[in-house]
Length: 408
Ligand code: PLP
Image (cartoon, rainbow, N blue to C red):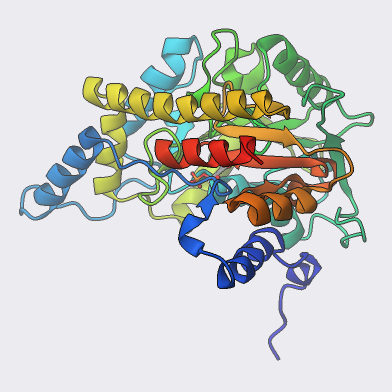
């Protein structure tokens, strides 16, 4: 008899996006569905940069020749891409991250959950609340939590609230935690962290032999000079942090799939007998065994992100989405809403009007003006009373949605 992984049974039903879809469907049955504007999903909308398309086209043609054909590539990624990443994303910012410390992959969503493969089961874990749900669910699936409680949290996890009171910056855990998930710029709140604040986390991790899993999928949206793009801009982070990066949001690769994870060679965990064990060889072994690399064509596309033309186009994409975010923030503020995020991230985090829940506000916007967003409570308990809008959309949709909201 086949036994299932019962940890999956602990998962709360994937409630958020199916529930949104259900409510939108019901609404569109009695209303003009073509008028609905969706500002809920964190997927990009603008076309791929020409530099990336050209590079991928060229690589595809190369693969059609006897000399240019490529079979399996290195599981860690081609060295020419890892060198570019090291130079442009790290060395240029003063971070000593070498190409060998970079592992190219098909997504930071998978990496941020697969990383648990090389980490012990009995580590104590902290996540922010609200949170990118992947961190929580992948811990549940691998048996690192207890059951779900009625309020939707899981036994055994430490939740660090982020809200207006703490300026959307989590406070350091009261008790010692082994693994800390941090995501900056933050999904869903759009908040960022300064070097001084991030240093507190690095110091905490170094003092407690903890590991920070730092998700920087949105780093390219940072506009302010004093906000770090990488945790390795903080001294000592190579000894306590893994960083996840992605080409999804900067170069529009959500459908192309390419990302990378940084595991510094210095980074150590411990065996049950308290021996220091480097994490790099474990991840290298894990990737070599379970992953066969990202396609040559896609890696050539990612490489083009670092060309002069590619950089210019990516800048254009980021500027476009950030202009959307600015328009949204200004209009919503003018309409009297309290609005956070949106300055260094493609997400706007709205405080919903008094006496409404996140879902009340969802229904209110849908019914009144056919605009769809994401209820903050779907990202965690402390997300209740907030609402996320995404800047990933066409300018005309953004302008139209804002016009409708301010004229309610
Ligand atoms: N990390 C965060 C915080 C995200 O919001 C997302 C996607 O929305 C991802 C990672 C996924 O990135 P990728 O497309 O590289 O899997």
